[in-house]
Length: 131
Image (tube, rainbow, N blue to C red):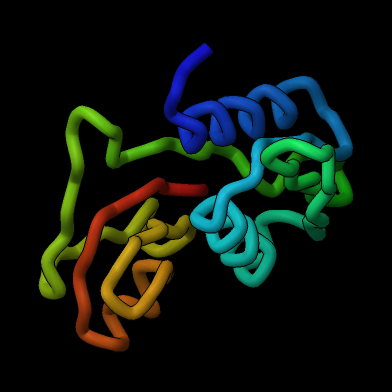
């Protein structure tokens, strides 16, 4: 088992999408809660709920499917890893699929999407890309 809970969470979501699951449980952390909140706000997932398991806690993510039974999340990829951090300056273009996807950045103003970071004129660590 990997110590990188972000990589484990993104892999769990990818596997649940491939299997056509309705929901998936991932380990809870403050950063993952903010990322999942962004995914909900951007329309990539239906909802999420925190679950107390008397340990670290879990986040139950309810996946969103279209009318043709295809998941809204086509792909999710971790960009910055524990061994190699990837940063974007405020003038860097970190758009995904010409704006159809999002990049999630950890900035000095919190966890933001690429569009929000561009609007606030800030850069930061590129956590993941979702399309």
